[in-house]
Amino acid sequence: MQNVTRLCQTKSIVTVNGKIPGPRIIAREGDRLLIKVVNLVQYNVTLHWHGVRQRRSGWADGPAYITQCPIQTGQTYLYNFTVTGQRGTLFWHAHISWLRVTLYGSFVILPKKNASYPFPQPHKEVPIIFGEWWKADTETIINQATQTGGAPNVSDAFTINGLPGPLYNCSAKDTFKLKVEPGKTYLLRLINAALNDQLFFSIANHSLTVVETDAVYVKPFKSHIVLITPGQTTNVLLEAKATPPNATFLMAARPYATGPAAFDNTTTSGILEYEKPSVSNSKNKKHPLLKPSLPAFNDTTFSMKFSQKIRSLATAKFPAKVPKKIDRRFFFTVGLGTLPCSQNQTCQGPNNNRVAASINNVSFVQPNVALLQAHFFNQSKGVYTTDFPANPPFKFNYTGTPPSNIMATTGTKVVVLPFNTNVELVLQDTTIILAESHPLHLHGFNFFVVGQGFGNFNSSKDPAKFNLVDPAERNTVGVPSGGWVAIRFLADNPGVWFMHCHLEVHTSWGLKMAWVVMDGIRHNQKLPPPPSDLPKC
Image (cartoon, rainbow, N blue to C red; front, side):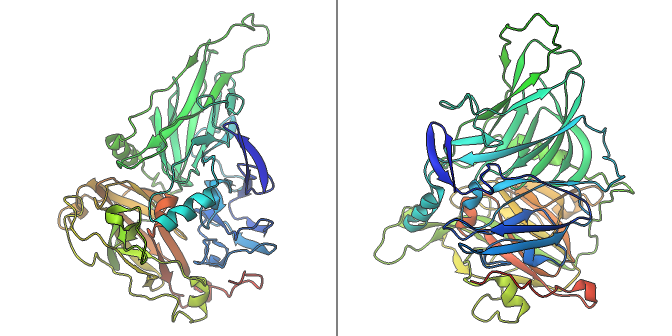
């Protein structure tokens, strides 16, 4: 625990090694990592290495009650995994309850020793991690919301590298500053570690060149504004102007929020300053501070246009291995709904019920032992069932008038996939309670975003328009608000892999499920047994 003061208030927060953001991990493609985690707080903890493929190392993936029991107070766990065939910006964060609000940090994988970037070598690399800050205790907030069945309180601020910036009360001293030299190029590693908000980001009077998303190189494109959902990372090149301008520039981030629900409508900001030649006489002149303009909070058109610009390099060196022959097709609705209130209680959700979130109307119930252990030791009975629906249990106009019955069902259900199954999955937003953009994250794999659109997915017309040549390859994708997205992946990694909305509030409400990928025939296609120090429940 560490006492930290933000927005004029001091609170005790969970940290890694007393820092927020936590320590930066820098590795090289091909490196093996051993990360010893010692739990000295009163909460159960797990850490997740977000976007790391974890080939045959599912025991190190980190989601609580999915691949491991949590590390209990006073206990230790050694995360042991190798980073293969990946390079770029990822991050790590806690994966239990809402602890990732302060437990997060960057995870940078450098290319192999003699490999270069497919873009000009930058002068400097700078991590820019977006976070979210509550004055109140977040564990109390989500626990209370779970009891009342209503929505938890929204955050008080957003942060850049742990600092809210000058647009908040008494936070001028808590401002991230980036000093640049004229004419030099900087690689900004943007990471959205916020709990519940997608963010627009921009730097006044500067264009950014997007070169990578989710640790996969993309065809470079220029944009004044970047949209980044929780769970996503984006590398951008910032070219400093050749002659030092007589101004300083604000970099700012604020939410993209699509629903009528309350959200934290504040703006975090940092300052971009140019290093001045020391002989200059302008020492004491106050330079004007220029501010960027950001889209309206509900600019879904910008969101769709921006995501359509992201394309894989699809070169010989960096191919896009899109599955062409599909073995199994799935259609998942994602969205909100309700669950009955416990007896003798009035809940704060719609119709005095509790708010829920679901996939194919199943609101996932966290088991009390880890799914991966239950699977590995063939002890699934009473822990999970393998009947997760491949299609919605009943059809309705998903993005039109919602049905009168919006009750979800509950269960700990998974989909079982044979090794090397080529999967196509359509994720369809629903307008039950409210249409909303859901950033869906898949553990253990990257997937290709082959198509997206507004309204209801049309299985006879839409697939003809799929991009199978150079689609974006990601680990987290925003399901368009009132729309759909189609993804493809090859299930070549044995284990149990969590898939969930990366808005933590929706995960808490049950917008999650798991894929069980069976072992293959060969030795190197099987999941090894768990490490001896795997935590017990």
